[in-house]
Image 1 (cartoon, helix red, strand yellow):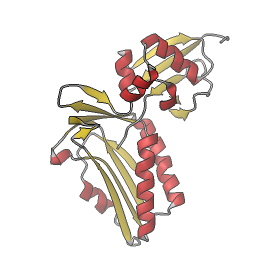
Image 2: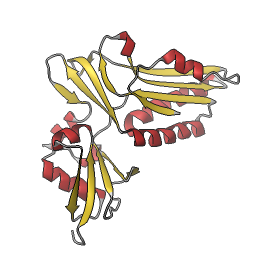
Image 3: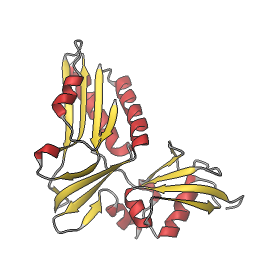
Image 4: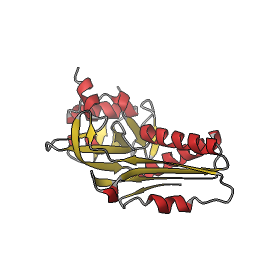
Length: 148
Length: 84
């Protein structure tokens, strides 16, 4: 199951929802908001997602992970909207959790899901810097290359 | 490029929306593929983004740059993604 939300991600609640009597292992990954990127001080992050295709493509990613590393339960939640750096209440930008019979599948499926999510799902991140400037991650550098 | 002019709705996201100054527009374009739509709208809005880093969807299905576009299609132009 994959979802996009503008609400605070409650990791404990998400984990409890994956409880499965057949699971011998659980692995999660949390993507946190960081206060710097490429040497620039970041004040807040802004996430934008195109939900219909995040859900459709995310469902495919979870199915692929299931195929490669059979798991019992998996869930992925991604934030949208503004996330202030340093606010513990909104620390988590993305959460991936996998429960499986044995740890190997949980580790591998979790890694597969977050790696694919980052390169395939239509989600964009804008950094707002301490100096007042802002920029879309992965976009500004590509745009600069395009000028040459 | 030849063929009939098609009515295409183009949707812009994130940086593309900011460059275009709008989220969506319906255009009459002489286009065959998704890449043609990208190139023509890029010229229209002066974007420098090369398409290699971008993704495209047609009518809410992920597509390839070589995918055909038909009259009445909605083409979604996605700048480089950065989830997580």
